[in-house]
Every structure is written in C-alpha cells, then in structure tokens.
Image (cartoon, rainbow, N blue to C red; front, side, top):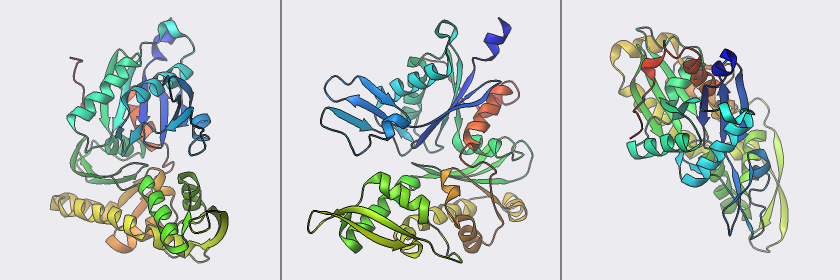
Length: 341
C-alpha cells in the first residue's frame, strides 16, 4: 500500500510544444507533443500527443488538430484539461488511486488569471493539490544549478512558446524576463521568409523540420543544405527548393536577436554582485531551443560571457519539477501554492 502512495505525486511540464510528466520515484514517464485532435462538431477527443501531431495541417473538415497552449499559456481551456487528463491517465493505470499531488511549471511572466487557469486544469484533471513552480526555477534546478546558495545563477530557457531568462539566487528569482519569442516564433519566421524570398508556402511542421535539420544561430564550418517542399504561391503547384543553412539563419535572424536582447536586458537589471557571479560562472542554456546549432556560440559572442548548454536541455524543466516532487519538503519554498478557492 505504501508504494502506491509514493508513486502518485507528479510533476508536469506543460509546454507549448511538448508536455512531459514526471512521476515520483519513477522519473519522466511521458514526453508527448502538446497537441489534441478533436471531432469538429462534437468536440470529443480523437487523439492526443504524437498521434495528434501527425494530423497537424493535414486534417479533413470533420477533424481539428490544435495546440491548446499558445505562448506558454492556455489558449483553449477545455482541450488543455482533456489533454492533461489523458496524459495523467496514460501514466496511471490504476484509476481508483490516482488523486496525485501535482506540480505544474508555468512561464515566469504569467498573469494570475492564466495561473488560475493552469491550476483549475490540474484540479479538473483529477489532482488533489496543485502547486505551481516557475519554469526558469524548475529549469535551473533540473540543470543542477545550486539555486539555494547566495550566488547568481543565470538560466536561459528557450522553449516552444516562450523564452525565459532569469537570475536566481537564494532559492528565488531575482530578475526575470519572459518573452514570447521562442521555437514557434522561429518556425513562423522561416515560413514568412520562404513566402517572401521564394514565394513558397510551407507548413508549420515542415518549417520546424527545416529548423532542426539545417537551422543555426552562428556561422558553421560547413553549411548543410536541405530540400524543401511546399506550394508555389504563383502557380499553385507543389514545388521543391534547396536552401542553405545560411539562408535559414538569415530567416531567423530577427527572432534570434529578440532572444539575445532579452538576455542583455536581464543582465542590465541584475544587481552588480550577482552580475559578477554570472561573469565567473556563465549562463546555462536549456529548453528545446538550446539544441539549435551555434546558439551557445552566438550568445558567447554577443555577451562575452561563458555559456554552457544543460546536459539534457529538453528534460531539464521536467527534471527540476520532478525534484520538487521528490524532495517536496525541502523545496517547498520555490513552489507557489494557493489553496483552491
């Protein structure tokens, strides 16, 4: 019986692109795209996660595939709650026991209304207590930074919907900035660039694939090329073009600049003592965006500070939130919890 009690607490990294579920004592048990597919008329759930992601941009009228989170916050409440419930159910086979304590990660710039929506979704999905932890905090804990010490830790978490930049010391966030320029924005930039330069329409999934395959933030020693398929906007027919890494970098330039600006602005607002610490220790890059080639080089180049990429950038937020679940009592202070009203 004791075992079933331990296994119940969970942490959820409810991301714009992916949702990860960490189960106490078991680690990350689920990592699925944050996508749901619904019946357009009845709004009933047809698929969630990777199965639903395959349908994005390919659905007939009767089915809608949507991403219920936009810019790191809940855009479609019902779908988010259904998605969360499905994910919790996938992890918990034994239904009758599952009333877990839930730790959910939210972007640091979230409003209290948005925060309440996340909480409600957690309660609706069957949690008995919902705690909230700010994403940069979770990312820093997950990346193994000594957040409770009196030194400055800087974390740059480039996710799907938001980029979070924060300076953490003594178990709290000293200065932080959350901007809505991140992975999705880079995809959009690629889409509009192809429209402009090649008058080619490409879908969101293709744009993301291009970014992963040849995208970079800093000139590379060899620049790979890729074949892109899309629809010609003049003739209306499918067409293939080949693009180089340099062109994709140019397409993403403006958005990358926003991310670098956020880092600069945060440094600008950091107390001098902590700025000195960061100068020594550098900043840690995490989130899916940390996988973009040359982003660490680019930040190093622009800020003159050491830049480290977290060991497992995609999982660091979930691991950090998971640590909050494992050491619930010790890390209680980083959690923001209000009882449900």
